[in-house]
Each structure stands twice: as C-alpha cells, then as structure tokens.
Length: 141
Image 1: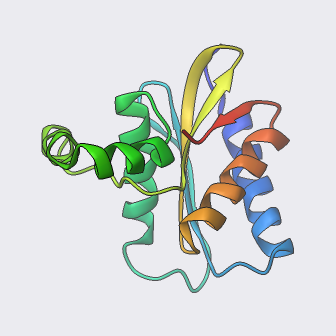
Image 2: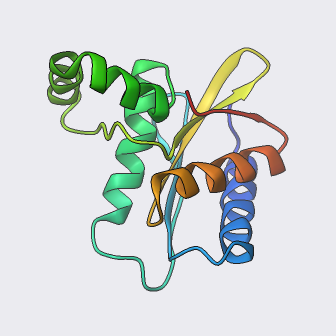
Image 3: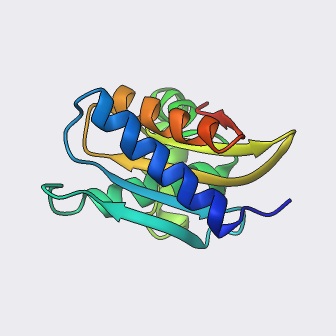
C-alpha cells in the first residue's frame, strides 16, 4: 500500500498537535513516501533556518538505508567511516540522530518522517505520535 497524501497530512497534523501538547519548540516536519518523494512538509512559525533540511535528511537517510535514524546513530558510533561514505553517496542527505522514523504498514516500509527543532528524542516522539495517529507503525531504529 503506498503512502497517500491524505495519510501524510494526517501524520503532519498529529505530530504538530503532539508537539503543541508537549510544549515543544517549533518544528520542521517532512513526510516522504517509499520512493523518497516529498508528500508533505511544514515548518512551524519560529523554526530556525535549515531545520527543514535536517528533518528531510533524517527521513531520507533512514529510508535510503532501511533503518530509522536512531539505528543510524548507533551505526555511526560503531562505523563512522561507513556513515560518512553513505552520506557522501546519497548527496549529504543523511543525519544520523533520532528524529527520522520509518513508516510501516505491516512489514512494508511505506515512507519515513523526519522532524527537527527540539531535542532528538522529542523529535522522534512527535514522529511516532504522528505515525500512530494515521494508523501506521513507526520504526525509529
């Protein structure tokens, strides 16, 4: 099942609502489909410059390597040369810190969410909340 625009928008809305409830700093949130195509994006008022690029790199890096960005962080700690090479190979679009979460429908990866603006753990929590609200499973790694 491909990730629909409607589902991507539900993820965005729910992640923003979760962040507001938790009183998070302004976030940038990107939702990609399984091909890595941008389905939905928002940068809240007050989000700092380049947060959008960081959010998208969290999502695309995880999607490109098939693991959430928390797993990428662990891999970067154990194999920094691999992560550096992978980052170069995909044009720099890989940020190996939590906040990039794979979207799963059953066992299938149908997309990824990347969030930046808060602590990495809080970015990840907002992504997981958005994904769950849309009826999918989040895999942060």
